[in-house]
Length: 367
Image (tube, rainbow, N blue to C red; front, side):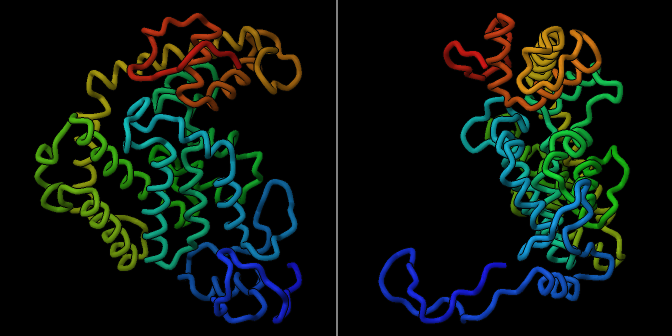
């Protein structure tokens, strides 16, 4: 930690002029002091931060930040996180105010942090998992998983890919990566209660905000919601989020399990089923998915046959080999929607009429 600047030292203020001190002078708390205070404030069973954390590569502890605060900051400043701004949540090339994969991650973090604070869990770990949970998504939303799966022996699951490939270079703590890897409900349960919170927060956030986006787009109306959802949760996103968040807090506080009461969980299930029927699986969405799958597979096969054209590829993999396919999947999965479409037009001669509806790729271009 740097030395404390003594009282009386000339200080430059952001807005100029003379003002009274905003804080009382005194030494900042060290990381060790903050860890002790955090441990005392957290509920038994919450995840404690200790030193540099359990990382694949050993690091020296930070002087001020806990290990999970470092993880959160690394994810927030990563290119993988920034690229989520150009990746589909539900709508390719979303209109104003509609969600992208980035705004989804931010809303999941808000829901998860609200629950974690209410339950006295580790907020920094919860936020790190939430911000990083979808960094493994390819372009075009969940259709990218269908597109990439045939080229890898283990298939392509965005949760595992995010933890084991995309975020691995950041050298994050084991608990953070576990939460990312297992946030999806078709995966094993996370190892920490903070990871469980993010699993619930993800479903709560996307069910509510995807419905709001679909209402804005004119696809559905609030009156079409199942009666149980309207009666239990209301017809606005604020009321729905409040109901779900408060129920998880109340359920966990009463039972010691991070979960949701049966009645409210039934409402969430019906809400999600409604979204699948009326939004995700409607004909226009299916057509969008087919366009995404065809384009991404064409890109992977083109690049796997020419692996030495893949930027940053290691070694000289044999064309069409498993190593070439993995390199191609890695490169394509990292693309934004627009980048993938522009690459297909520039390098494959892809007919623009076959691009997902609504996307504008601009003039001729090459990587």
